[in-house]
Length: 238
Figure 1 (tube, one colour):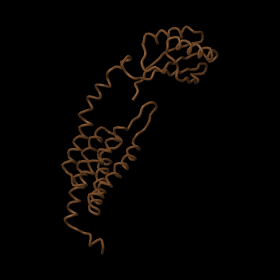
Figure 2 (cartoon, one colour):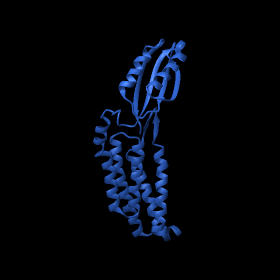
Figure 3 (cartoon, rainbow, N blue to C red):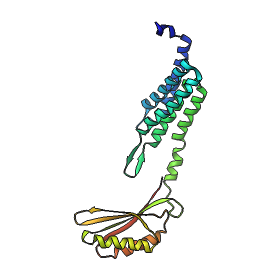
């Protein structure tokens, strides 16, 4: 009978309106993600927004605004764990960060709707959508720009492929030539390369290099007996 006693038509309609708004706005965010075939799409974003709205609405009804504020804090941390599951590492690349951030945004939209802040929920949803759509061309344009070696923070690696019988001598000569060029080595990794060769990978401490200097080191390395190939590359730090 307690359930019937707690039944309040006005509160029920308020909850229905709040959760419907969360469902619509979360679905709108998810629709953009689904269109781009991301991991967390239409259903996931809608569910996150709806769940956040229900939790906040229930807390507000049972304990008032103070209780709702406490539940919002738990929603923020809980969705953080959910978003962490969408983040994956593939080699040197980390993917899923934008998906995780979008889920966080959907939770914020749902929490606003659950707290009866429908105007704020709409504004939040619009800005989440804008971040995923309007900023995309800007990001693509920046990513297409070549890395400026002199001005960007980057990690530099030197690779030398050599005959295994000369591996020790090549390793020693590699360190020596880099030291002479004032590019100290942070770490060295060696592993088999094919049936008869080995690859030596040297990571540098430097955050910026003069390309011509490293090219000269590569030329000198390729003149070392037993060296098949020598080259270097740069990868921008996150």
